[in-house]
Image 1: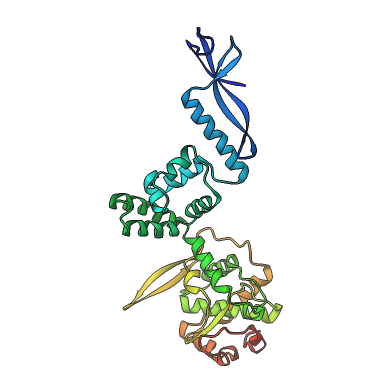
Image 2 (image 1 turned 90 degrees about the horizontal axis):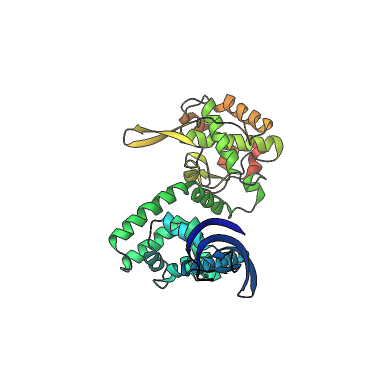
Length: 340
C-alpha cells in the first residue's frame, strides 16, 4: 500500500473526523473470465483498517481494471484511444461519426466500455494510416456527419500526420509494385534493397557532377548489371524497364522521393529537371566494398558522359536492343555488357 496524500476530514467508515489517507493498492479482479491485476486508489481509515471508494474512485478504478484487461488481451487502452483521437484533433462524437459508429461509442471506450476486436483493429489502422483517416473524413463531410469547422480542423492534423508518414507510404508502394516480379533473373538474383538504392544514388551524386535524372537511371542500371556480370547478382535488386530513353527502374517516380534522396529542381525552358546531390551527413552502411568498386568503375566509364551520350550508349547495349519497349530488361544480358 502506497500513501498518496493525507487529509483531515470526516471519515465515512468510522464517522469520526481524523486524518484519512488516500492510498494506492494492487487489486485483483476477474473480468470477462480473465483475472487481472491493476493499481487502484482508495481512502483508508486507520481506525477500522478498511478502504472506502468515492464515486470518482469507483469510476477510475473500474477503468484501471478494464485497461488491465485490455492490455492482457492486446487491446488498445482508454488512454491510447484518447491519444489517437487527440492526434487528429477531433471530438469524441465526431470521431464516432467519422468511423460510422454510434455517436457515443468513443466516449464509452474512453470511459467505461471495452471495445471489441473488430473496433480495436479499426482504431489501430486509423492510428497508423492517416491516409485512410483522411478518406473517412471526406466521406463523413460528404454525408454531413460532421461540421465544416470540425472537418477542416481534423483534416489539417491528418495531413500533418500524412506528411510524417510519406516515406512509409512510398516504401509500401514500391515494394507492392515489385511483388509482380517473381523471376529472380529479372531482379538480378537479389531482393529489392531500398537502403542500398538510396546509398547508390547518394554515392553517384557525390562523385558525378551535374547528375540529372535520366543519367542517374542509366548509371544505376550499368552499376547493377556490371555487378551481376562480376558476382552473379545485382547490387540493389531493382527491376529495369526498357523505355525510349533507356533503362529506368520500376517505381523510379517514388524512389526519387524517398527520405535520403535529395535533388534540386532546375527550370529548362518549359520543362523542370532534377539535379541530384548527396544528402547532408551521407554515410555508407549497406554497400559492400566490392559494390563500391563496381560503382567506381561505372563512374570512371560513363560518369563523364552527357545525358545524350549515356542514352546513346544504353541504346547500343545488346540488353536494350533485344528487350521489347516497356518490358523488364533481363540480367541475363550481362554477358554482353560492353563494360567489364
